[in-house]
Image 1 (cartoon, rainbow, N blue to C red):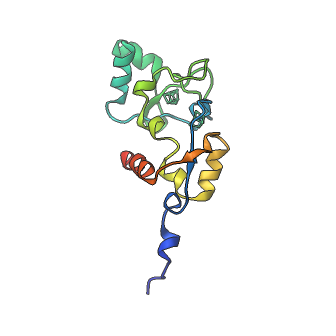
Image 2: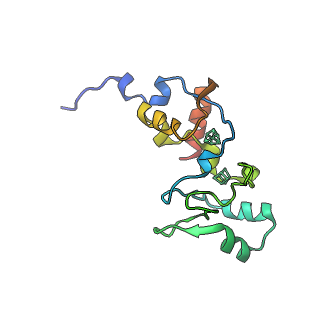
Length: 147
Ligand code: SF4
Ligand code: SF4
């Protein structure tokens, strides 16, 4: 017989709790470690290239990289984990066409799944826990965009 579980218990964390988030623009989420990458959805590299007005060859050489699993990602900038598009002023240089991964942060499935994950991410992102409660509909919409 299957073990019974409470429906409350099985609800994802973001549905059980009110989450607050307000971006301060600190830029910390655009830096990381050697395991940090900005992955690209189909068409995103081309949108960024077009936005910058660069040739395909130059754009690929300067701004794209491959992971060990041969996935296309944005290159690092001055140091490992730092996105090549993070300016010295802490601003994103391709903000209007930034990848989905950036647009949906911090509402990633693995981040909003549990309180522990949300609080752990708050150590990196000072916007977590700030500001007004984020409407559940917005969080659900961000999650849906990543499916
Ligand atoms: S593309 Fe922009 S928002 Fe995304 S990690 Fe790079 S600098 Fe940050
Ligand atoms: S780390 Fe959080 S507060 Fe800082 S720029 Fe990124 S999303 Fe905004």
